[in-house]
Image 1 (spheres, rainbow, N blue to C red):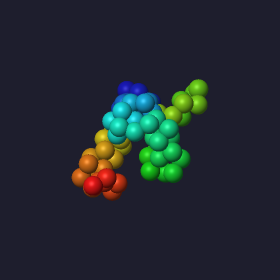
Image 2 (cartoon, rainbow, N blue to C red):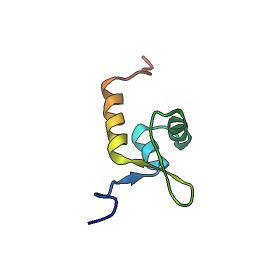
Image 3 (cartoon, helix red, strand yellow):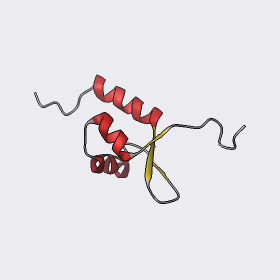
Image 4 (cartoon, one colour):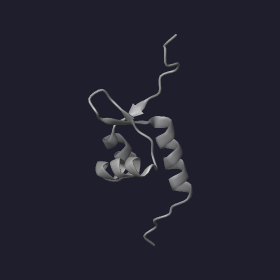
Length: 69
């Protein structure tokens, strides 16, 4: 049994950006704004929990706020 319980899949900013079809800098801005929580690696890089990203992605696809129509 691991100390931290079950391991969570972590995504890089580029992977999150790919899912949302935005620039990785946008993902960083979302994290700074509190829209998405991030975990910092020992090297200081941001990582995002896949489960949280998928939940946000599902909410965004159900409720598109920024429609260009």
